[in-house]
Every structure is written in C-alpha cells, then in structure tokens.
Length: 127
Length: 130
Image 1 (cartoon, each protein chain N blue to C red):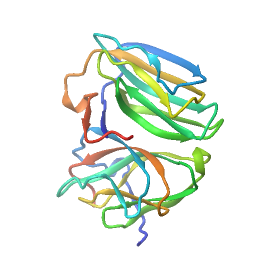
Image 2: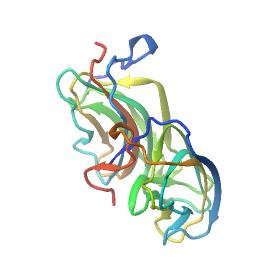
Image 3: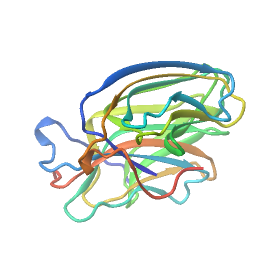
Image 4: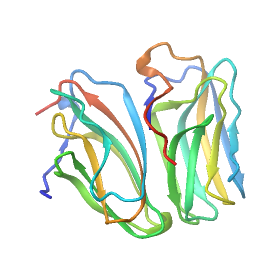
C-alpha cells in the first residue's frame, strides 16, 4: 500500500458545506481483506474524520486506516491484546480523505479488533 | 451502525453520574429514560476494574458506543463536542461481556427533542455490532 501525507483541514481550509456529525462502531473478527467503515460519499464530497478509537481483542493486532483504494491514511497502529494498549485520537483538524473515497481499515490477518469513529461529509472539500 | 451527533448546545438540566459495578453483564442503567425529553451525553469515561472484555453503551436497546476492549485498570474517555443523544424514554445503560467490573462517569444534560434532522439522536442506519 502506498503511504501518503494526509491532509488535515485547518480553519482556513474547512469545506463551505458540512454535513451533520456522524459516528460509527465496527466489531471485526478479520479485516483482511479491508473492511469498509464508511461508504464513499459521492462525487465532489469527501469524508472528514474527527475521532477514532481502536482496541484489540484476544491477540495483539496492527490496524491501518486507509481509503477505499488502499491508500494509507495512517498506521499500522499496534494494539495490545485484551484492550491493554488502545488508540484514541481527536482530530481537531479533521483528517480528510480523497474525494469520493470510502473509509476502510485493514488489520493483521485473522485478528479481531474494535473501532469507534466520528466524521462528517464535506460537500465542497478542499483539494 | 451509524449514529447522528447533535449540533445542539446545552439546553436542559445537566447531570453527572458516577457508576461502579462488579457485574454489568446483564446491563446496568446509568440514567433512567425521561418520558418527555432525551438524554444527551457530553462526556464519558470508562475504566475497567477487571479487564479484557468488551463494554458497550446503550440507548435503550441500541448500541451507541462500542464494543470497546479495556484491560484491567485501563480507561477510555471522550468529550463529545457534538453530544450523543438517546431517544426520549430510553435508558442510558452500560453492558459488559460477562461478570466484569467497570466504572463509568457520564456528564450530560436532559433536553427536549431536537426538531432538525441534522441534530437527530436517532440511530440512522445499518446493522448493529454483535
């Protein structure tokens, strides 16, 4: 997977039209192949992530956050088994995905983890 | 599962709850539902007393947060800039995988239902996690 430098949407770059804040929960036994957390929002729109919390279940797991094309946003983040080492992050400057791309996660093959996230859809995203 | 987060500001009676239980496997009510107004979460902190199992936060029978996995003594906290709402009449509750000790601190407020769909507290889509 290619690794890019994600765009963080600063105050002067926020989209003009911003949808309602939404959250999602994922409880995955396996994220190989990638699991889609949020569907692609449609043309001329983008997903903006504002929060993510991830925790591992019964085994250590590495989780990578990517877009629908497999382009890595960040990670892999190593999580300890049984919630011993979690990841929780507020993005004060929202993390923008490429226009009209889904939010996906991948993880160590066959290893379970959970994910909670918050996001919004920007209707006029920065480019 | 997808949940809308309110854009509303604090408009009702605030509350703070500190609940410790040694067994939340059957579900423990943190705040009883109000028949007229909904419960809104502004902050939550969950600490595992005996860890390694899942924890879920419920709006009635719908999961709004979780599962989270926390080891013994590990905490997770979150300030909701956009409060998470429970439907009126629904209890705010915590549930764990099995006999599992947990401490939950919740701050929020009670308010009237929000008229705009953009600030709806309803569960809006798809499947719930197991």
